[in-house]
Length: 264
Ligand code: SAH
Image 1 (cartoon, rainbow, N blue to C red):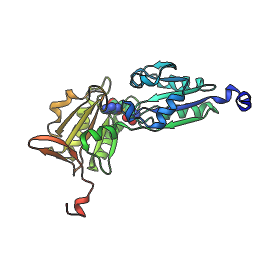
Image 2: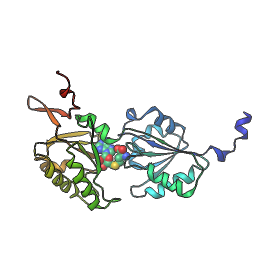
Image 3: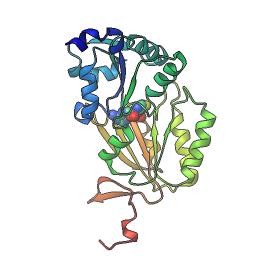
Image 4: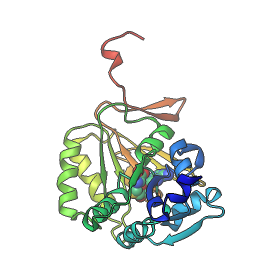
């Protein structure tokens, strides 16, 4: 009791950057759920707050919109001077998420507030499980959003990535205002990979409205309309194949290499 009384409220402040996974509570870690439970105040983009709504009863909830990330980071740090604050970020907060901007703002401000980054399942990993095992070993992730990275630089990296002929995962495949990025990326893939290369798309992995599509690099163009901002695209590598069962696509497999060592 004495300890509690002596502890000034100013010392209690802390900030959790909570990764919420693909979008259903079962795919959040126990640590992430505990941090959310502890928070007095939860701040985030409205879309991600809605996905964790059952966890938010009785808490102050601050909704922030897309494109307001820097303000959101500043606000979360200011609030956490004397309160337990959780900032939610979809998938993993450290992968195309909020963790870096919060840490950069904290670094610049010289704040003493403890900040903990709580990891989560990123979309490449959750969506891969819906396709089978399209990654399995070495792979590359790229974002097709040119909001923070110049498009020329994205093209340069895509060209290098597809040259490796390992699976490439495309986040943000349909950038706001730049619907042609996906076509351009697939054009670059075609320079280095055959038309039969498997392509998988998962829309809304582990969320309401989940759908998947399995096609090939050669035929993908006919299905671009399927792809939106809630989708993630997998372009296979040179060893990736589609598991077909009497004409149905069961999934996508990239062998890890056991066939080179064992008979099965
Ligand atoms: N930090 C997030 C990524 C944010 S970038 C993470 O680690 O997953 C936003 C992009 O992530 C979307 O455009 C989409 O490509 C992908 N994404 C995030 N959640 C997804 C989901 N549940 N299903 C499919 N794609 C998803």
